[in-house]
Structures are given as C-alpha cells and as structure tokens.
Image 1 (cartoon, rainbow, N blue to C red):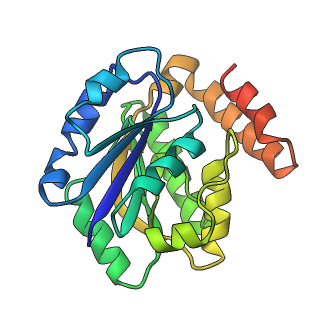
Image 2 (cartoon, helix red, strand yellow):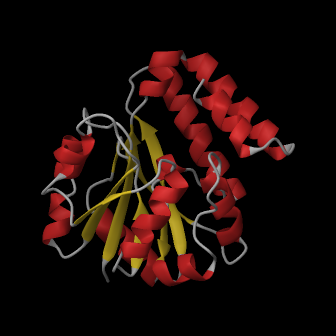
Image 3 (cartoon, rainbow, N blue to C red):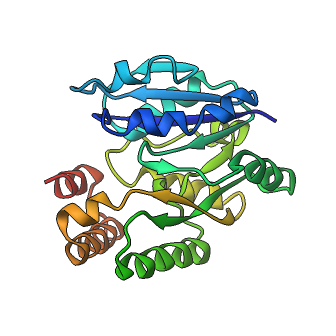
Length: 224
C-alpha cells in the first residue's frame, strides 16, 4: 500500500527543509511526498527542490493546495500534513495497519511542541474532542483512502474550516480511526500570540462557524 503525503506550504523557508528531511525515509520505502506551494514570497519553493517527489504551485489556500496535491497523487492513501507537523516513528505502518483494519480514514493524536504545562491541557482537550465528535483538524495529519476522498468531492475550497467540513462528510461514511501515537505540531502560534488569547480565538471562531458566519469572515479574523 502506497501513501501520498501532501504538504501545503506558504512562506515556510525556515522550516521546510527540516520537515522534508524527516520524510525521506518514507520516500525510500516507495511512498511519495508532494509539496504544493501557494505562492510563497520567500525561498520555500527552492528549499523543497530535490526533497519531494512532486513540487507544485497553486493559488494560496490550504484547501486549494491540498486538492491540487491530491489530484497529482498516485498513492492508495492520502496523508495531509502541515509543514510544521512531524509524523511519529513508523507512521506509514500505523496508517497502513489502520486502513487494513477496515477504517477508511483517520487522524493522529496531537502533541504541541511547547513545554508549558498549558500545552498538555490544550492537546489533551483537542484529542478528546476529536475522538468524541469525529471531527479532525489539519494539525492531526488527516489520512484517507484516495478513492473515498475522490468520491466525496475532496476538500471544500473555503478559506478556513475546510478540515471540519471534510470531517463532517467523511464521518457520515464512518467514524475516524484515532491513532494514539501523536504527531508533533509547532506551538508557535500560541507562543507568538499568547496561549489564552489563542485558545479564546479558536473557540470564538468555531462558535461563529457553528452559528453560520462565513469562512471568509473567519479567515480575516484568524489572520488579522
């Protein structure tokens, strides 16, 4: 079973080389790495040359970028990975074993890179909420059988909350597998903007989305 690891990037020159070097072992096993650059203004694209099987360009927007990557993928399973997220040891085998156990999609638990005790609480709540609701976020490295992804219409090309919408579609087919081994994702947004402030922002955005506020409006608030 072949995996296609799809990474949407935008101005990630400071992290992309380290991120892609960690994936070279998977390439040596026959899996593929696809990087989709959303028009970076730094050297992200050049840094990724030689470290991915396919290096694509697209308009900015994670959903758009991930869909373009999926269109070019040749693997049996698509793995959507953020540039600042690291897969756990033997993630390929964990995913393959999960798919072979009759799950069609899933995600990993998440661990934030920061050492502050608050991050342990945040990640525990994220993982618990995801298992209970069946909703996964991009930080959790969502994976899905390529055939199912194509059948369900791919990511909705909205500016924010695309992972939530995809999860809603997929969980109507079946609940996600929740792999306990965590991916390690950067806590930089919490550290830069303040832990409490960022948590409150996330809660507010989710509530507004539930109440029908448009993804375009939420996108402006998130990146303000």
